Length: 73
Image (cartoon, rainbow, N blue to C red):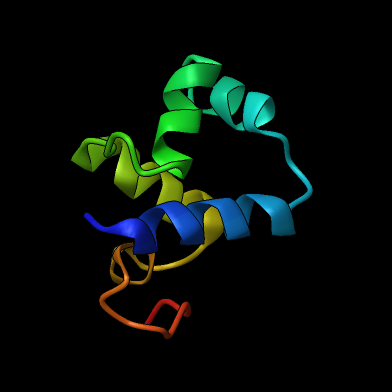
């Protein structure tokens, strides 16, 4: 994964007016663990990536920067 993921994850979270702590709680992560995704220090496994895409109603390809179209088809 690239920095696209980190930037898009942060942007999507901010659009929902959620804190990193709230995101961590929603996805049963530590706050530091979630922060590491937003700074590009670590990457989520497939099940978490899928859950994030579902939560934000975007495609996994959008999260990963493979497309700029955030809409699900």
